[in-house]
Length: 419
Image (cartoon, rainbow, N blue to C red; front, side, top):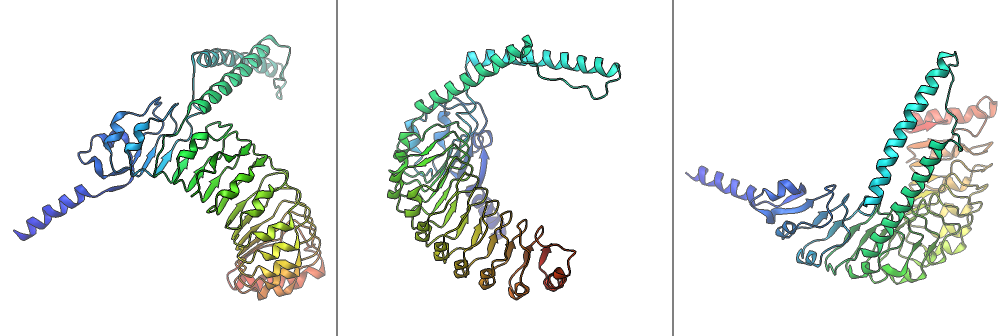
């Protein structure tokens, strides 16, 4: 009898257990215990508004509304008092209108017509013995003129819809939202109403059309992480210095030609990603960022690093590959916690011996430079697990022999060496 009682108690416990995985809306609606649903997904359902039934899930921690056509967020969202994560990706990018639908329909017909015509022309040419036949785009061709006109109209209408969506979307005062995922929405500016999310800790706004990291976010005083990668950013507002808790900012794949001066004042930063921009210089003020642990400067046009880089004594991961560096400052020897250093694909012609002081180094990439010499002391870096040195020294020269032997020693203790 006691065993049966325990069995039913176990069944009852399981039925009341909160569900931590994402639950699809249709499955959640069918549940009796809606209070057990913590993460609810209504993504990619072509919604223009949020169903009232969402508010039955009183204990929601996360709500996924990505891939819809929402133009406004109801004030009723405030009823979900435990909501902390809100996903709104790909709403502004999926908008439609009668005009856009008509353009797309006409484009579909013309593109199919062009495809058939081009296939017939190629078949005709090949029948004449021309096996390398191909279609050359003719700007004066009437069909191509029509297509270009429609492509232009399509882009204009999509831009107009995105702009209107930007203007219409407003955030209600959601007191407990800590994470907002707002990417892939063609945003041209950060909505002013974002200031109502006073407890926001993480803001994901990558892959939009933003040109500035604007002051609109400064009321979100608890912000710690901002991902604004893959936009068109050329400026960062000085006002972000008011974000006293900011420790992570990702600005890769933007249009920066220099490091915004305010960045050097964000002394609490632990991660800074400025890769894939057009940056040419790094200021000595970089030494102010004494808490940095991850620094990404890859794929820029940097010609020189200041000696103050050696003040970043908490740095563990440093990526400065694919630039135009000819030397590495000797002060890099001060980065004694460094785990990973990638300086490959630069113009460095002498092995930086200061690297030999980095006893915690596990991953070193110096490949694709112009080094004519290395150092046998590399084998004394006991923690080295990955060493990439290819495209430097001439492997056929006698001078290379002792280094080849050193690489074998490293391999014998488990390291991966690519020469």
